Length: 207
Image 1 (cartoon, one colour):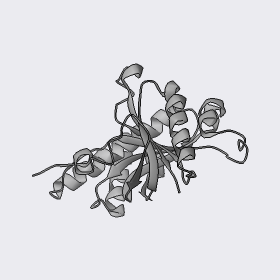
Image 2: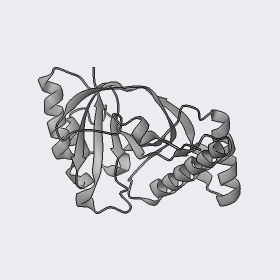
Image 3: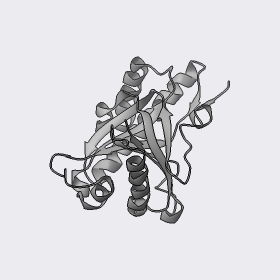
Image 4: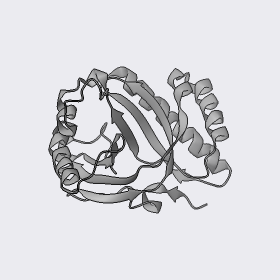
């Protein structure tokens, strides 16, 4: 049985350069769970555990049907109350909005053949085996970002404002406007990788 590797099948989606660039991102399907708060806190960790548990349950369900795949990279959409912090630029927001006020949608991309029925079954299986209550919040989320500016960030998350500043200058230079939520693709496993070696794609939908 051939195993589908999404990072290879959609190589352009999981690739970014060291300078800002304009790209077009096609629609895709994700397992998704939402929340508000500090990503270093326990509630976020619990939701992350639930998301991975369901992703692997879906994978094994598909494998029994002859459609195996590799669980893809973790991703996140991040936002905050822009009416409350309207005075902050994209770069300033990452520094000045309290971590407790950030809204996140944590995601793992799924193959096109994964169905809502398979997700429902996987959630029931994980609930039965692990009693992870956050799995009840997981949904199959469709995203179509389209035109976006992206750049590879290498190093600690705390240094992302430096990369975001370059992206903001690129957006302004090309007379673009932000048109969606800040998107991060974690090419490295931040639970196992030294901060200085982390590789993260930063992406901003624009129009």
